[in-house]
Length: 460
Ligand code: AMP
Image (cartoon, rainbow, N blue to C red; front, side, top):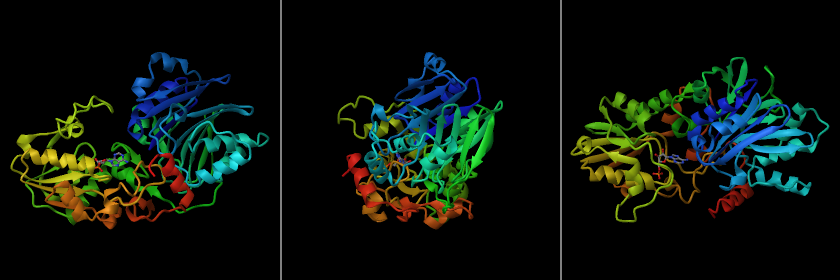
């Protein structure tokens, strides 16, 4: 879970990157950074927290040059440390390198071990640092060959935006797990995780960076290569279900309309005897539109979200039960009381938040609560960049749907089928990664990776 952004050839490169990151904030709230370059030196500003809190006018003005790369981070591999903030910047004898990475490599530990053996000294616990060491290795090669050699040994997921001196590089792994798109603004090229970032700066959408593609942008020229053997595509389906912003288009389709179709498919598979449908906002809102339309029931707003809830606040001790949930979402009792509800949510991960939400709906006087989930049960962890807990904590990996229904205090609980989910994509020719539902991973997951990674996260 991270967002990347880059601009080449614009006098306001850093300001545009700031705005791009602002639009990508949902992809990571833990830390953020921007690096720019003015042909003489690099400039960097970064910090732990939200884009709006880390950058002020002074910081943006200090980021000189017509090339900039930026990142918003949610830690997956690597701990939540300030040394792990991206873009990862190094000043090396062969130049300045800054890397912003979305995704996770699956062979991190083998690669790190091999590099350390060769003498590399790592500064962070991030998998992305491997690219820097690979890039720095052979200074005699030209930059294109260096990039190819640096990316060739990587397995797993990467959508990358890199700055190598005054060259902007965009790259997507051959499976294409995470999105990455290309835009243009006043002759300058822009790279972004999602199209919503292009919209904000009014850049024209050009196309997606294709799986296995590397683009090199120098001044206002772009060169594209596909140096790696083709691999089976594995677009992350969870980007559509939960992660990407609904106003973005990824993998060739709009996210909102896809979520609406997921909701409609859910209504076809599992209608509910109800007086009204309501979403758990915001994540369930889009599927709820499709569900209600298909089921021909009223779609009501049954809960209001407080948009000003920060990530940390003072907990008013135990005397207010479910405070964390209540402060974020407040049910409208007059809508809910005495009603049979179809409650639409996009996904259940641990089940704990959903359980507390159901409890507040019940305490508002709902007569029946039929919960409908717009994806199948999440049973397996993600090794490609979505921050899911370990199998032990995934409720659907350890309990039947009926047990989850009982745990949450529901009258009924139904999940969308895997076939229904794929059908709703309207992309029959596309191949998705559905590993979190099916347990079928599109790449090899080395045992060492999983165990060590979980140890690093303090999860086992
Ligand atoms: P829970 O009931 O605790 O599993 O929480 C379910 C909620 O978490 C739903 O509203 C989902 O939209 C949301 N969610 C789904 N995936 C993630 C994720 N990777 N990180 C944080 N929240 C998520």
